Image (cartoon, rainbow, N blue to C red; front, top):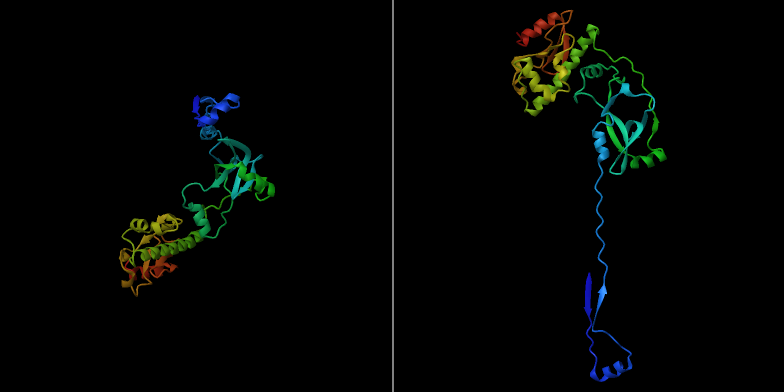
Length: 295
């Protein structure tokens, strides 16, 4: 690249001649300056996500179970407890620790076993061999300082004792009879929530199915609509279907939900409109059944 710079000399006629004659100044009228070209721009390096594609291609299991854990596994505290074997993966020049985090399996709703056990005060903290742990990548740069300072506990994984789970099989009938009352109280809570939402109106109760479909969004768990033991739906009293609570004064003792199948001794758990769940003898049931207009 060439640049030409012209310099114009404005010198008085009287003074220019002596200066030129003495040879003290000789300035060309123009000259050329060679300038180096500007440097080419440095190309921006492209992100390297090849490490991520390796993960996607199942370089590491996407999930493991407690049965997969054993020697060589470590627990690291990173907000929550993660399990790792110390393997790392580089993604776009950053290094990540390959770890696994415990996740609840199945639907967000509690399993029937969990719900029954917790409702009845049983201990469900025992670990399950099929507990699921899902893959997580933890940036090593954020782990270094907390580990050095002792903020993030790092210890060997110690397999917990895998005791037998609380089982709902072969339980005594008294357990189911008590659990029915617990479920009916939870149905009462769902009825209250429904009435508050719909300005004091009770849900459709023509059938057990209609009642369950209406109350399910307000229920703690769908299992409460099923009588434990015989595993049949609780029955609803259609007399109260779609009625306003304000129009039902004096009927608080009437039955709105009840066991479809009586216990071995003929007793039956019922839910009164006032929210009380009680177990009635066969004789008491026949009397309240007539009062509540249950066919």
